[in-house]
Length: 175
Image (cartoon, rainbow, N blue to C red; front, side, top):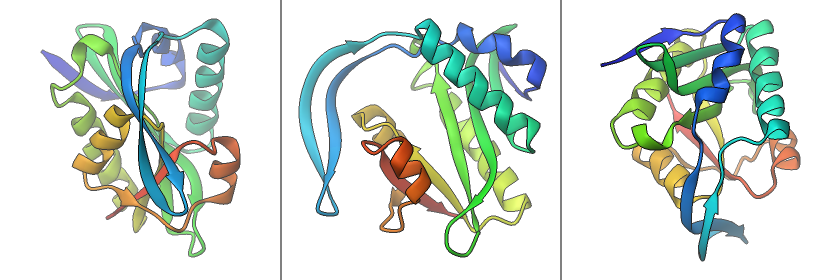
């Protein structure tokens, strides 16, 4: 049975338990405001030390500045997590970002990501956000997940997030 809880700074060490690997068959690319599908065929590995260190740093930065993390646990093993960023975004400063959303490979398609996203969406609403901003990896699995949870492409792309990850697919969920 999967349990969910608000995560703490001390649980940063649990992030390495996530198996983020996946086989990627299709990615999306934005061209002239349109999302174009491109065939791929490669295996994305789980964390390497550099990427894990970067994710741990982002996780801690958000929690230390007022962000929030929700974890999904199979007994005491972290099998999924998502982070609601602390920083307000958008011209009206009415958007909070859903960041660092991962579910371990063997736990996908069981509703874990949806439950994490719903919890973080409710928290964003509680904080007064009108939108949840998502800078999604360009894989079909990620984009399809966010779309199935109410996200849509945005023309109002956050310049800072675009600069950090220009290949990402930028979406919003109206709250």
